[in-house]
Image (cartoon, rainbow over all chains, first blue to last red):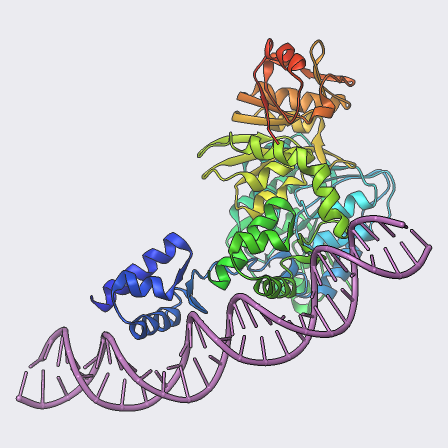
Length: 250
Length: 250
DNA sequence: TGTAAATGAATGATTTTGATTGATTTTTGA
DNA sequence: TCAAAAATCAATCAAAATCATTCATTTACA
């Protein structure tokens, strides 16, 4: 039996069973233990499978790639400062939209306004919001597994029934020419619509997002006030020509 | 049996039952007590489960000691049985609605159908659904703090955009004259609309709900198939005259 | 035919396993 | 409530299974 044949057979068996014993493979291929071991070593090096004691297993997806938990350790302090600053803009009686994301999530504990109503597409925000006894509306729609954000047609439909005093949006890129951007077009549409439905809009982004642009455009710079944590004077002037910008001092 | 296989099996069993006894695992895997203990130690270190005296439990489960293992499983046993039975009705390719509530939540780990899509108004269901990689849509609307269910105008609006092969509804009362009832009128409206939008409807309720009625009516008995855990023959005949009823055997 | 690659058997090292021990925790029953 | 009994536990150890490595032999192919 050819090496390539064996490799194919091994991977097929693995795909079917998720775990295979070395002895099973010896039988299935009528080759020696040594050969199978060599095969497994090679296939492991090629990242086609994962060796385990006694055989091999599928290399199942490394759970949460950049899940909320992992992300939350990144630039956390800056994000907290930005969030705290943004929370000031919420005033008594406001009806606001809070976008899904780690920065906007940080806002919630810092909101002290009374009698507000919050609408959000971030399932992760719920716990913090209910903890503070804030009446909360969730958008409908498809749940994005990685970020637990609500997106898609359903989210847009739900949004259409509301309008807001203020909205707070997280973005992945702020760029003088390309405006506000985020990687997922579905999310971009939700953010974009929320902006349109708000009397006043705020975009939250730490300095790593400045002068960056990603795939899907949300809106032009003019559409919102930027809140960020750090910006040299040259860039500040550039952006100030287009829209209001708040730089949080450390 | 390979270590990998055992670990998978242990976690699967745990996901279904929430608590497992060490002896059950010994039987299920046909390995020795020592081996299972080692497995549990390792899985605990990996934060995949929590060891309790006599076995293991899910992580996010409330802190309750071994007594949980005996008693809590007893209290929840009926609901779990009903849920497990109901989960059988979900078939490959189905698009289903799962109502908020503890009994319906129990269904999720027992669903084995492929390529299904789930719509729900229960925020608590999300974790279990995403864990199983089931594409999930959430209704919009107001969050009810106590139960984390989505209700109100927004929820009804969201629902209108869907239709289902099957729906699984929890109720607080089933009564020959008053039909299906639940205490909160807002929730009743959501349940009622979900029923109307389904080709086939199932109502899940343990025996304590039989012959009871509460404030808000959801629908007449005819509107759904009842799944319950215990019913004397006299009552069974009474209900069978009106609708299909499945009694789960212990 | 000659050469390089692949194979299989043998070696000793490493890992996993199940049984046993005595310690600890929980349950039982007075 | 308490103490004895039962169940469960962690730790240890030897046997079994699996491992990486080496080396002689076979196979593939120019």
